[in-house]
Figure (tube, helix red, strand yellow):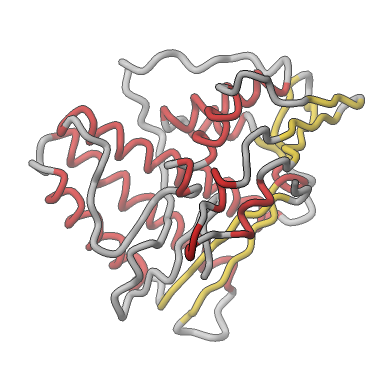
Length: 272
């Protein structure tokens, strides 16, 4: 069983019904004026985490991007990881729109799921929020222009328990979030923090999987953003209607990209 971490789309197929436990993820730039201001400081790694979480919650691409860096060795991979964060933000946008319109964040799908960390009920914003809410702050080590922040959450919050236990995700418990200081600001180093594992079933076996994955991720983002906008404008009158419209659009994106199924699982580079 492939479980979800940073972005996971588990066997979301365009040609057959996907399993109901599939976690997915999505994104945009539209931040309602009623949202609180995003913290501007990245003076410490914790400040950077606070800003990154707020930016995801408020779907602010520029602020998310300002909190991320990479080592430049894999531009395609770095772009896909960024797209994952944007997708996370887009799902937050859908939930925020649903909460305002329907007084619930539960937009039901027949065969899709959207939480990157299912047992945290969210994505990286949920991970950060839960870390910073612990009675004992996360351990921080600073060494010149680099720093690490230890994930201070128990394994069960990542892997769950019982028959569906996802042992791979338990490595996030005690894992290290690695930061780099860039022009005075601390940024999450995605290359040294996130090990993204992608599996896909492409119609064209000769296609570049990374290019297709990024294209599909962007199209999924567009579908979620369009759905969030329809909820906000009143075009979709109930959570069930929103779920139906969004699900059809998402499956259409798979078909348009000629992808039968795709799955991502993010694991920490330095696990616990």
